[in-house]
Image (cartoon, rainbow, N blue to C red; front, top):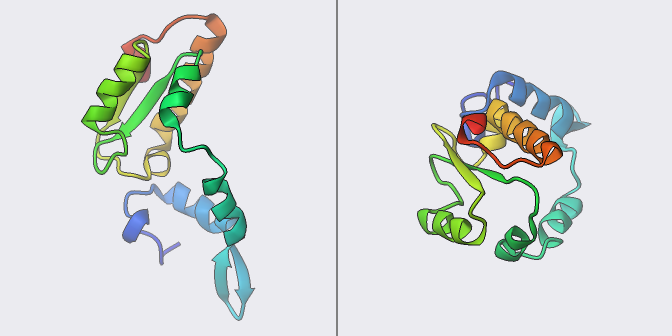
Length: 134
């Protein structure tokens, strides 16, 4: 864990997330060395399997939608937020202060809250209220 704490992409990860990454994301490769548990071919296939059409996917969403946007280096730009609003007016975009590209690992509390809120709202057939995603 010490090798990851405070370094590189792991810099903003909470200690428990780093512990999970070490426990579940790495396997021993012999002589005390470790390697990623995920086969690189499987990881590559995961990224290439999707259609690269976020706007089409957004148009097909029928359940309540909340998008979490990282404060630093977000993939959801200001222009994208306007396009999202034009396609799905009831979508909510919440900017997570201090978070970067690895937002789900940096702020698992916010990611979990957004998922739980979306699931509850979908079951109740209601739209989002900003207070629920704060």
